[in-house]
Length: 580
Image 1 (cartoon, one colour):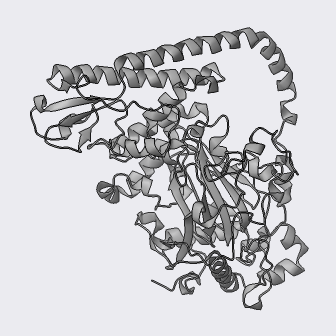
Image 2: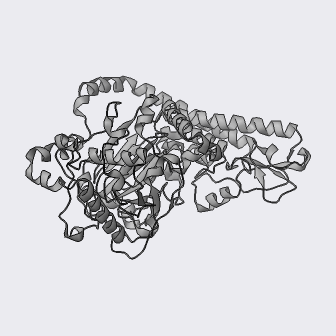
Image 3: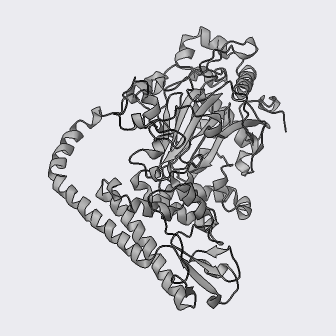
């Protein structure tokens, strides 16, 4: 988990969000007691931001009154309980993140009560506003460009435009100088345009990894914390999680092979531990960022009313992960959010963005793989009787300056009929259809016509592809030579830096480890800078907290197992929606 050095002062007034707006967003109805089954979420009610937060606050207070009736008394009158609630927590008296974690898994795993919540996920910031102000220097897809400000130095912390232009602003980070998503100049919600998330007690973001195996960054604007779980982004650990999924949901996955992509399934980390899949957890508080890495599965839930925001980005080392995601999507016939081939060749057209030999080499390897397969399949198809009509059909040249809306629309029209891959370099078509095309791998699935009725549509010729490869190879050599010349100096500096490595901790991290020691969590509704009294004239609820840096979940941590020690759990009313 990463924290900005200025995180606790960051945008707590919701500069871009009108929390008093009458616009309503949709929610998803999550049946907590059935989250292990992988069923699709139904539609919840539509809410304004203020109504959602008020409702979430009231229901969280209701949960506290029923489950922890002595909480306020014990917190107010016991100094030891305030600083460390572990002693009373074992009897269910004190409400802590750990006790709420037990409550959550009790519901999910034991089915002793039927409980559903409404989750305001994937709220469109282009309609409802972002929690961050929009750039005036062209850094955000939804922002503006003021010619008088574009060439000015970056504003410093404390200056008026700092939050508009900082790359920590989630509207800006996809287009940061070292993010390859800067080449996407078309807004894709949730990818390079942030989504807002309105959460309530136990609203769940189920196990998933990111589209195209991108990085993600999540900022917690305000409200109660979120409990996160994650596994490392290695192929071994990702396959380990999928193996557990298949074992416990084998029947479901026969009907829905891409169930994991639906993001509707949650099960205890204990099941992953039993299969030696490492699981880590962290509690994210307001003013903190959480970053997830390519292919890393993650999930979690809210500990009360809150508002967060998330978006994707990708550094140059992402390229191999993007290739693996692309292959996976083709195996499920799932369209990718953007053409991987287009993005890699666009990166090749902007070689000066490459600063390191290592990442340039990754790009070269991916281009060599794609070009080799493309040219080999072309030769095979032509030898089988498929016609090359390049000399007779004039097709528009692939743009490689950027991926804009026009390019994205064109790509949507050339999806493979079989695997839904964007046919960026070429496609196979047949005289029997005016619209259907296939990638070179799957032309045999397209129709039953004779091969001599099929023909190749080629957007990128062989010579152009080879020329691109040669340019990238030469640039790799230049970078390798530059790095070799700098090695002597770098080795000296590295030895010196390794001596001081213990002191080089990101600003704010050390302080963050103690910020929440003996702290508390409010169930008050999140309404920006407006002061709102606690619902039903109840006092502000506080949950005793503790510092919680990311930590490995060990097998003896009872907070993530099955718990049935709460004798009254089956008698509790639903705290958002009545019993189903």
